[in-house]
Image 1 (cartoon, rainbow, N blue to C red):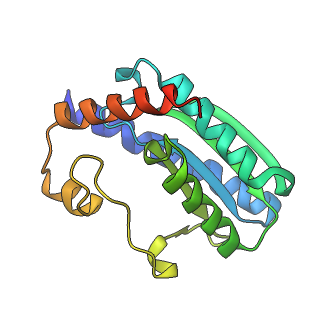
Image 2: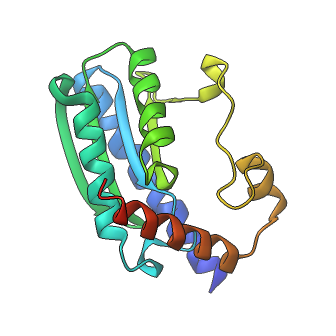
Amino acid sequence: MQQDLIQRVLEAKEERATYQKQLIAQHQLPLVSLTLNLPGGYFQYSHWEEVMKKAIEATDDVFDKDVILKDTRVGKWGPEGFWVIMLPIAEVKKKTIVIEEHHPLGRLFDVDVISLDGNSISRRDFDIEGRKCIVCNNSAVDCYVGKRHTGEELKSKIDEIINKGLKAGC
């Protein structure tokens, strides 16, 4: 069961990376790639469609007139969005960080910026600290690698963020 789940996640990442490379090759511009931070799979969260809709709206609002192409879909491992943006990559990354940090549901958005060489642009590339853990506010990477929180803890916190964010009418 666990192995099957890992296989599905890896296949989804590979499928998404292939599509990202196609879009970059076709347009020769930075790419914004949106997924949701919903551990265990989007299907475990009753309001995932509303969360994704809010993520898409936030991305549309931030990039407004700079979008060359937009595509959204439900891939092998959940909802995805792709925007080809006509802006310098540093500006694109800064705007995605604003979405993730300031939107009421932004903690659940994973908004990656992909450069023309196909690499993801990191917050560290701009000397910006990495994201914090949803549960304890320590380094998200440290908590993930150290498996510091149970699936139940994560789901409970995410459900709380979803309920608050949707009630906020964002």
